[in-house]
Image (cartoon, rainbow, N blue to C red; front, side, top):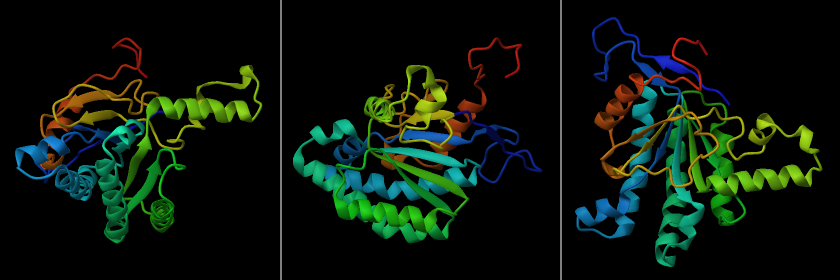
Length: 255
């Protein structure tokens, strides 16, 4: 699914957030939130406190992105591989996610944020899933920015799940095309990301949105996720604005 970009346009040489006018602003930003454990080690606290600091940063980053004209953000919160982490860490992550949704939904709703879960639902605790569905229903008509939480999400699992569903429907091979597969992904209805940002200085996509990121730009920020803020967002947007997105075409061709 394609995407469009916005333009920061102001009447002065810089916008309120320090970005120059007429920079290309990505419509959809996807973020691999990396560095919670390293932040905890750096600050001499437990891993659980690092994850808590990471969850507390979600609302701030969502607000900063909305202020810059971003319309959609997808956050990689818990991967299909994260189930293999130590049991106490997995339990902490589940508890923190549940708490973040339960306590944060009213604030998100008041700020016009539309919440959506992206990922596999069957392994989530029942109470957590009920809270997610309630948050989606409450915020479904909000339009300031869409916040997609990729929880129990993995790109390969997503594609395998889509193929299984298509096969179960008995569709013929000649009926299968990219559009059909996209309609069976966890992200159906969501535009492809324009840029994927990974915090923590790494350069891997770690099984995140591997179908959707075919033509996404990639940006690595050295900031650990709990420290990722306005300055780092503006640096990423500046870098994105300098990229030439060709989608397989030559520079002189118009898409």
